[in-house]
Image 1 (cartoon, rainbow, N blue to C red):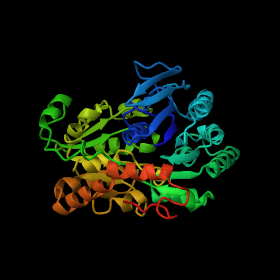
Image 2: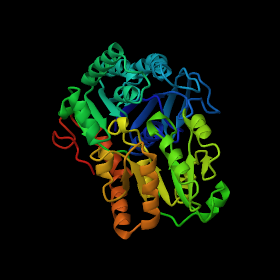
Image 3: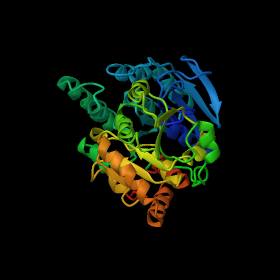
Image 4: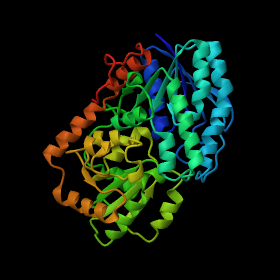
Length: 417
């Protein structure tokens, strides 16, 4: 059994995004008998505010057998522009002494860094070298590419060159890189990373927890959703990369169609603006995140999942919410360019429409309503959900962390399940 030190800005009990997956990863490694320590921030995502009962300061706690060291981070509610740079840099600085101390005092065999944020990489690499540990980077998000693609950092030439130079230097230092899609792996190879270092393992879903359920009419009543409506649901982070304006504008196009109702559940930096944009639309309802324990029932309240995405971020991130959508057994409509990995992966299991096009989304929703959810699409959806099985993913991740750096599949990138 190994000692694994995880350095990640986001962790349990965050309910969405990287924190959800990294927290589950830490718990799974403990289940497998490994010792786990985590250096992270207080839970703050996606609302960019520290959640009670946590405070934005140094603290240590135990959770599911793992020791979690929390370090403060500079935050404000509107996290646009330069603040999207300040927050991760502040965490990299406050977590640096804790990371070095735990590496020297605890002597882990593996130091695992989760991107975002890559700003933690230099200190984590130093810590791994000092401890004689293997260094692993888990790329959940091509952070630098995405920051410029969605406009967080503008398009300044010098800043962009510096950012990509920093990224290349960090990537070169890791013994192993794990990422979540083939297209992200291709991007990493374009940045000069050797394929021998890379493993592709998609984010997973717990099929014992999230499963197809009958239409949850009682939960609809509790949430104030119409019993007889065709409910189109988005559940997740509400931020720039999600491009949720298109959902509100599709709802505006369909506002006179009494059959269709939109539910948008979640939190994030773009929520207030989105709520303002949806004012006066009788067919839109905003909901809070639902507890993980109730997530299967919540996903069972809808008739159609909607997964929008900015065209510019199409192959830079693979939405973390996808596994739950597939496992719920409901149809899905996705905004994605043809040929992107998301569109290719979901071929035959989802309706694909042009991204950022409200009319295309509205037309697609009407098509889904008319067509229903046939047996072939149901079977394809179930098959894709099984490919994202949590036990399989955890076995592959464990092998990637601990196997010799010659490729977890004999020197090649692990094929997609």
